[in-house]
Length: 120
Image (cartoon, rainbow, N blue to C red):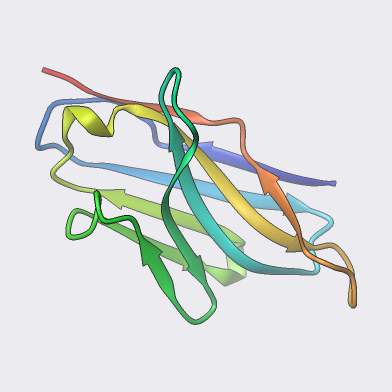
């Protein structure tokens, strides 16, 4: 089994910063990509940022404000969120595409989510 554990959410004022972390553990052979999605009530989960071993992808709504990075040795992905806006308020979910043994396909795993609230 593979577990993703997120941390770093909370309440912050507009213009503030937060750093989310997500550590993957368990039966991991290889991780192709890791990323962050977010969801608000009544809306679909949307991609925020994703990172593979060779590239990163950020949604237009967070470009210039958020940065995604990854520590492959620790199987951990980070999301540095600066200049936060009230519209960034959401539950943020970590995602990872994981292969559990050599030659197996990659499966998507999800964390439990962490709440980010941007409010004065």
